[in-house]
Image (tube, rainbow, N blue to C red; front, side):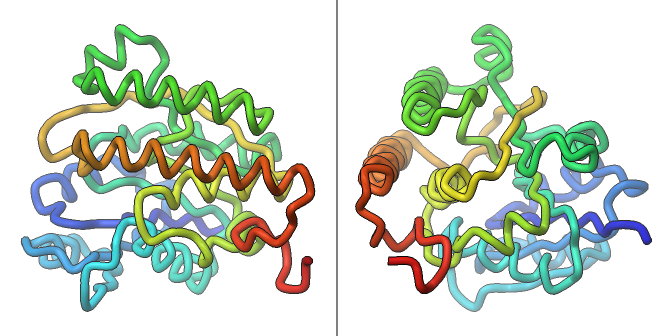
Length: 250
């Protein structure tokens, strides 16, 4: 029996980029696309429905992390074996899906991230703001060192998961904001999942990123706080809620 592949898109005001993003997704690989709209103020929902996508609408704006929580819940309920999270802002080139998912199907990795920063020249040449580049490099170096990983970057909006990952990680305990992504990856490290990455071409333009400079600073501080919790967990403080492997762990 074919293992179901589902793309989930956490959407907010993506009317200008949603259709272009969907057009890049290989229909011979992906069985279903789910869009979770976080109470957009534009025509994101209308476009998603016109494209024949499965749409779920939050009755109020809940945040990026809360949007992903809904995405993953719906993907699991749909019977997905592989879940691909793609931002609908047309920043990430979804044409790499057949190649990236192969690492999971071959049993090499449990999680694959798209790495936007193959070289500094390429990242900046694609329009990545210089403050985001250096912030990404700074955080990724620290996160790799603390967790023992060797990822090209930790902050990608293109991610592929095995079903077991979403069934194991207590992501419902995570933040409803942007730091959800960092919490999730640290939880994956705690759970012992194999994380890898592949280079992914990106496009930077006004609609392709929802985090401004101030939000980026807040995100950086929050990500460092997650690492602090991880260090505390590793030295024996096991009552940190987001890292508990099961409800009865003390």
